[in-house]
Image (tube, rainbow, N blue to C red; front, side):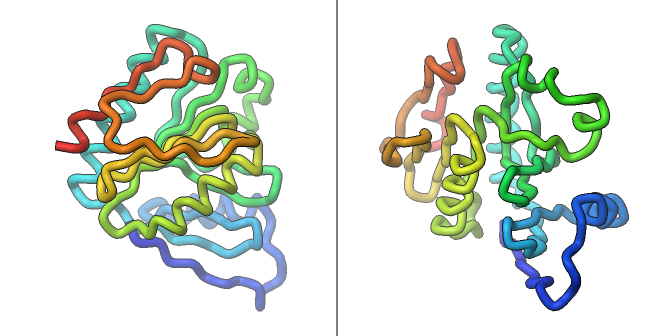
Length: 192
């Protein structure tokens, strides 16, 4: 998906509530906000990326239903990060106790919480450097595990706080027992 970034610095600082109202007033558009207050307009994905993302979401959702350890979110969910950014990972997951620590009002709006886990799937028009920067931003804001799945390069980049990025070449499966116990995500179908 191609993203367009608008520099809104000539305008007075807009609040989180104004950002939420902008999103509500434009339901056919997907917005994110950078930590610098730039407005990012994210274009929809194509069919192949949308299908792949749905399959990954289903697999993670099915694992979560069995494990009953947390809550899974799709790419329409916008999270409010401590640095002021508002981001929407392709797939996100939060442990139950952390999610339940938020008020109902916080859960209904853009949750002020960094997910425990995020997944980004690189589509044909995504710039890799931009996605890598986004993954680092996730870590800097409290995400404990991130997977950047890149079908174009047949690889998965694994992001963990305090560790170098681990690059896996066309793995058949990927898992992490610390953050996502019991999940073994099959990926062989992506590389074929």
